[in-house]
Image 1 (tube, rainbow, N blue to C red):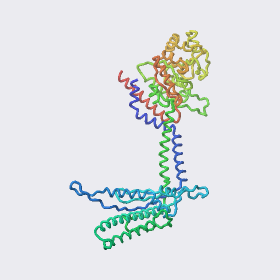
Image 2: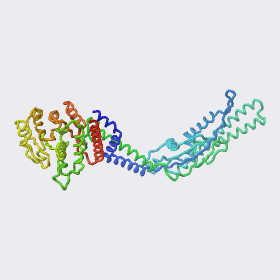
Image 3: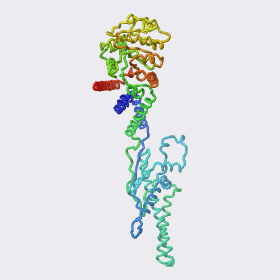
Image 4: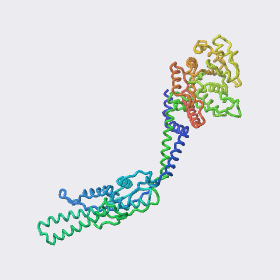
Length: 560
């Protein structure tokens, strides 16, 4: 088995690539259907989806200057407070408080899923539910390495999206201004407490500080009245910002023209890729579930034997109703099937030149796999090579050769063996094919296996070899009876016929193991009836095995 293993290893990459293509091509309808369904689904979803628009505003948040610290006599800025401040502002922008202010500014907010539907069919929702729905439409994103923040709003109404984004910036600016006023008041109150320790109440410093604190209190009260979430403010009331805040509006949101979703071209491209991957997955799933032998690679890797030749499926010709697959090698010598059987003859002749193989049996693991067709065509191509050939029907359970050649089944091999006839020539039928004779089955015996395994059978074969160059036996399927296994010990070689896409790998493996159990010489397997969709595989394997045979022939000649 070493030469076979070397062959497989040397071509494993090429065979694997061709096998992948063969599997995909075989199940291309599954692949195309899956891709088509995915693309159509993407088109329908994109066409029926409600367009979503995105509007963005941009603000600048100026943080406090970094605090100066001294570490081991080195003076350096500490940016910790600035980072914390900036992160805090982002969280403020995401807060429910700011969303409440925006809700009051725009008047109200109706979630997009409720718009355009009759009011009597809609369930009432609370203010908090509307504010939460509004908050979900807003995305706050800091611009990396800057103090700039993007406020992006998505909505099915482009004008409303821009309005919400701008209202959000105004609400945050006003919220920030109140925060600044509170901080300023706290600083003044602290300063006032310190000054009261030095000056009296009527001192100008004290009265100045108190006046400033009162002005800030008035301003805070005014801002709180404007920003109060409990008070219903008219739409557009948040129209301005305080002049003391550290927040600046860089860009106001514009009404978007094009939707951000759905993106039809992107959806179709993604569906195409998803459909392709899903289709390939289904292809290989079906292939993994299919346990039949389909290629020469299957025969070599699973059965550990040679694929002698792939044979294409014979298609009936309506113009020639009498054309039979058994006679394709004699009636259509230029067909690919005839060429395949001539390739089989070459594989047999050069498989081992040092071993003269004159007697063969042809069998299959199970019925209806084409063993009789292979037997007749193999005998035909040997006869066409000017070799005296005889085809013997040893399928003593279900004989067919007599009906193929349209001769009488009586007076066949069973009569010769059972009755001890010595005049073999009297039982032989001449055929229309030059150099090819036929010996039918005769009467079906009650003990076929005993008859084929008898000493009389050995003597019969020896007598045939005196008059013929090649003796080919058509035998029953291996798994149907033991006849082929019994006869394999008395012939030079056995040929196993498997039907592409039909023979189960376990059935073929059991047949091969049965031959090996009796030390029979299994020459290899014929991959029969390859479908037209696998013609590329046929041409490749024919070339591949032809090259193997030729190179082996040259190697053997060098050795001699």
